[in-house]
Amino acid sequence: MISLLLTAATGWAQSGMTDNQVMDYVIEQNAKGVSRQQIVTQLMQRGVTMEQLQRLRKKYERQMKNGSLGAQDITAGSKEVKKRMREANGEKRQETIDKEKRNVSPYRVKDGRKKTKQNTYDENDKEFTEFDDAADFLMPDSLKYFYDEEKEKEPKRKIFGHDIFNNKELSFESSMNLATPQNYRLGPGDDVNIDISGASQESISETISPDGYVTVEDFGLIQLGGLTVSQAKAKLKNVLGPRYQGSHIELTVGQTRTITISVIGEVKTPGTFTMSAFATVYNALYMAGGPNEIGTLRNVKVYRNGKLLSNVDVYDFLLNGKLTGDVRLQDNDIVTVGPYEGLVNIAGKIKRPMFYEMKKTESAATLLRYAGGFTGDAYTKTIRVHRKAGQMYSVFNVGEFDLNDFKLMVFV
Image (cartoon, rainbow, N blue to C red; front, side):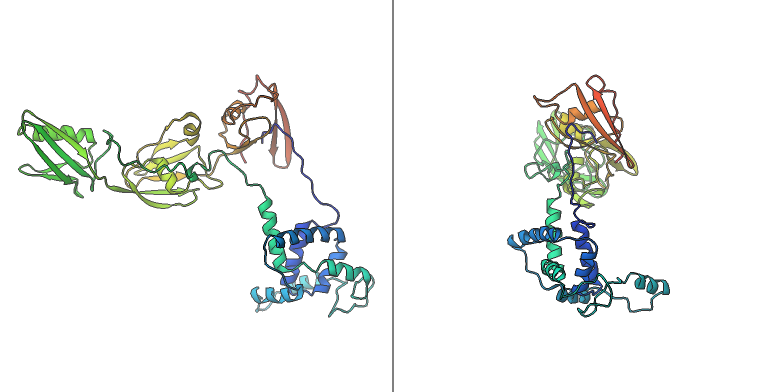
């Protein structure tokens, strides 16, 4: 990861259990049918404090205030959980039985009464009753809303370019009313118009048959399927020219056929799509919803008849306006989107701080260019690179004259 701004993370450490661990533990014990009193006892023994419970309660109440459903008593809640949870009804292995016996707390409470053991808690213990009241909100429903709230707080990783195919203002739909490209290859289902003007005036409209032919009166079958528009024009002039001497013969394409394209791999909606014969790779990516969270924009591959036809780097379009590799698709072409090679995060005094998909041959200077460069108040003499390799972190200070030579390790 490359960063121009250091950040620090803090966490709660008042007890031996984090907030999420408390929630996980209560859910687990509820599913086992453990009583409320026993759960409260175990939380106290594990070092959960009143302050931690009060903090959790505030989170829950804040969620409730925003319109969440109410909760019910933890004992009743555990009964509901037991109804929904499957229970093993077959014989248990002996080691499983032994393990369950080992996991029984020596301080457990049965039917709300204290077992003869020191350091246990019951309803006659003031500390226990206060803790029990504070833990009253810990119920299955409240746990669900707590997790929902925590999930919403998690920042969504923004990767440059990943939202382009979901932009409502940028549809990438094929434009049908364009002049037919001269390299467009005719096929079954295309409507062709043959216009003869000059000494003779005649118009012929035909649809190319599944075998690739059109029928012209007095000439019979003429094969146009598989030819480009320019090749088809030349063939018509050779075939019809002797009869229409002194006339101009023109071919235009009316309604085009549809083609079937498959988009597979790391896209949001993989599948097979019926598209216009004018469709390109970008149209296919748009139909598939673009790459998913781990999909690549830098190496989209197009296969035709089992052979690699083209590689598309969408960054070349986003940053340079070039449609390199964006070929016109044909029937049964396959577009594949693999996982990204690596991501690098850049933050601090740059114009577009976010994650960028990088190739292993690209340098820190390339990343800065992708990010729009430094802001006006940035210190540009040095950048700091944080690199993680397994459990180890390395920090590099890269000078302005070394940016082009410093290769980024992007295997993440």
